Length: 231
Image (cartoon, rainbow, N blue to C red; front, side, top):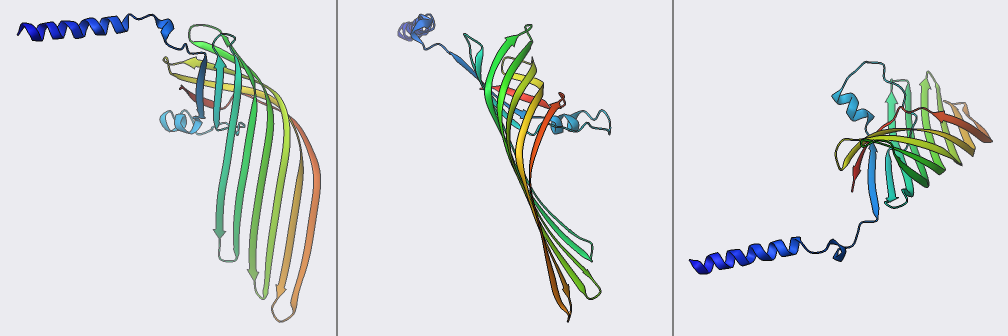
């Protein structure tokens, strides 16, 4: 019985000694890593404030920041991808639309603590967008069949500043929003082919192509809400 007490006391002593070791023997954490996801749809499901929901202009659905704890400088990355395949058929017209959009940004960021709960973040991003849209339409009316195939490709790049404000819910979870002022320049290519097929009378084909440069400067107000988790 005494032997068990001695063993138990020895184990407690070892545990206390291990806990009391100098913390300098463990590597100090130098960076914080935070992942974020756009949470507007989730908030709408939980809190239905009204039927008039504002348009979300921020396409970067996923975000990642790495911040140095000493300087509060770091890197900020945003990514968004949209894929939709839509098919409509009303009996006379068949229409299939394929949307394939990619948005990417990367830049430097500076964290500025405001209060115990609020933190602001200032970033400057480099942007790249790649948007593809394909539509195939078939219309049948009497003895005429019309097929329209259109392709639209947009590649653009740019940059600009962004400001983020986030609120600390607990030690690992934050909620925040951002505004940005981006410049984008790119090229839009459109290719449309129309085929009119007249039963018994042959067919006619028409092609239209366009190649245009597009430049935009747009201010996006803080309508996107992000749920962020410290890794």
